Image 1 (cartoon, rainbow, N blue to C red):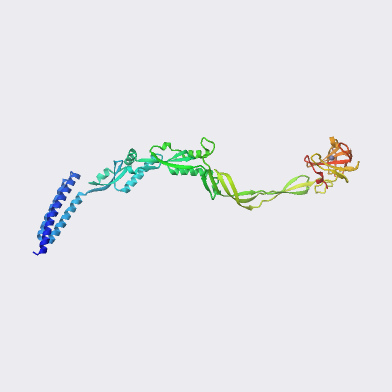
Image 2: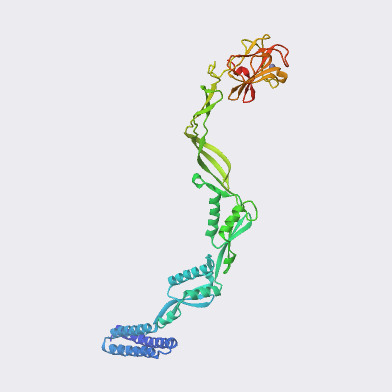
Length: 470
Ligand SMILES: [Zn+2]
């Protein structure tokens, strides 16, 4: 036996001295654990010890027959095999996660994914039962601890977390609250909502309702003129009854609730393009074939169209300011043409709408003024006075300041009056022709010299006779 062999032998001896007692202690400890975990399974302990003893016996047998260094290897391998067997038997059971809420055990879940799914469905259920409010889970009250549950899987199944158990525990342990959103307008609370979406939806529907025709507001940018604030806070469950009806809040914002004015004023500015009518012009055409004063539409007017683009500011839909940017006539208007009759009579009418001369010649003295209703035409006493147009004599006789007066009606609202006459050559009811003598020049009534006071009346109104004379 050389020194090397002696060393190996010595080392192996010491290894055996240490190894087997360690194995024995381990086996003893494992057996104690198993007794604690599986009180009914004493056989497992015995099986472990039996395997240990068999392993030791076989190791000794192999050690005796084999070379010394091989014997050492066999000893170690056998010991490891035995230890592994014991551990395998001991570790039968399930690795799960224990869920506790506020320290109260809810049960086991297999993994975090199962926990997440359960929590989601529990939240959905609680939310549904509380007016679909947004829930806040107090995560700090919930613990999820990895746990080894020995035994077969039945042990885990019996204590698996159920949705109902989780819901009940979350509620009973006050581990769930609701989010509540308060809508404030100009510092005044106008509504309480269960979700932020409900608040923004309500505000958006107000905007839509007051911002007018959306189609023409391509560049619509708006803002509320009042301070709008949304505050969120958490509240205990069971507050659903205190939440506002979004439609009622919208009505309040627009109609002001008890007040008559809206609570919000939404201002928009944008480019608006509209199509607007373009007025047509009316022109008159004299028609000598139509009776004097008759009117007839020869061509109906048709409004045109133009496209106008403006910068428009609206508050709650009402235009408060606008500025025209551009305008384009897309359809020209069609003028209306009205024919106006100028024919005065069948006899002697030249067709130009003019009256005949009431005297062969005269000297003009005085025209129409606010205090004078006709033209004074001076002529020698007894000069013949002629009908300026065909018509019917409707008056002859004294007529106040006119003295002897002749009135002729020409139809179509046209009359001529002849004052201060010396004598008459016609009588009321006579039909006279244009140019027919009806009287003679005198100075009856308020007259300071011999003259004809000649009046033209259109529909009862005095006009300037010279505008109607040839
Ligand atoms: Zn006069």
